Image 1: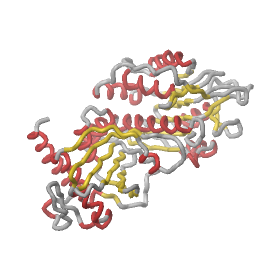
Image 2: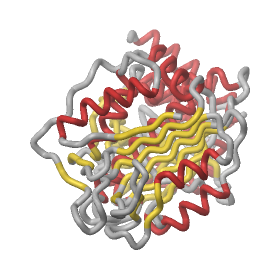
Image 3: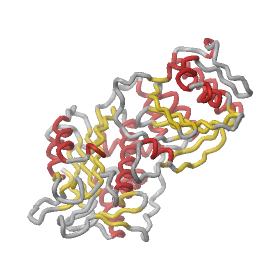
Length: 430
């Protein structure tokens, strides 16, 4: 992109941010840190973040952008996970790239300091901006779109705040990554949201055994990937996204049943229930689907059939119940396995944005009824790789690249691909 176009982008972004925050650059009379790339910050921002951090943020010698890929596994807080995350370097930002982001950070009205309604979600940053000061000190700003939060890290110390006016931030990031499907879906939703009322609610239940020593890493990565994908679906189709995360201390059958019983649905709502963990059957079970195990034994379980019945009793337009788990008889076999030698297929080319949104529409907006699917058939094992469950990866791959727009075709393709790993998914569409 030419420099003239980037200068135009800066002017557009500054105007957008100013409109959102209802303040202008000219109104900032203090908080200047000097230097070639200096931006004036509100005094309230300086009080919030501190002089040392602001010196780096608003007068950096360089800013480098990274795309984040969380490294899951082990014990720790949200901070521990994202500080250990893998980063893919996008590149150094020129001054005309930096200015919109700095202006956003410099305005206190872009910080949502109301803690009365904290979003209950895993902090999963999508992008990171590393600011390096003239004194070689570094401040990294991590941006998460699923929680509408950003975190500021310096010397291993982290402070996290909610931000407001998400559309401006998404537009800026989408200019940096114009081919990014997730950011493109978010941007498209914001551009149309003023004229188009929401279609309904997209309820996503993410239930995952993230603390298990053997499968916790794969379950955590799967739950993150599913959440990101379903949030992108909801944004693209103009649905409000209602997430129910049942992990960690909330990972037990009674809690899941309670949440499902309390669910309230509109006539056009979508409910997507996803489970990643251990599964199994009793020898006398007649259902084609497993019991979800909240642990490694049959002491705390919940039939997948029951999940489908509880959700459909609320009369949403579409119910999708998905379990990435095995179906062996409890105590007789190991229902989870790892596959390190068989690589996942590369899949077809990712759909362009228009085709992807059309696929989302066909599967989640135009479809109705219920879809129940498990990664393994009766007696079968669910396999995983270091990147997560095989079934989950194949499902997401086909969702983003498949050529047919109905659930049966999608699941049949996933079923065929799964056979390479010695597992056979089962499903029922009603």
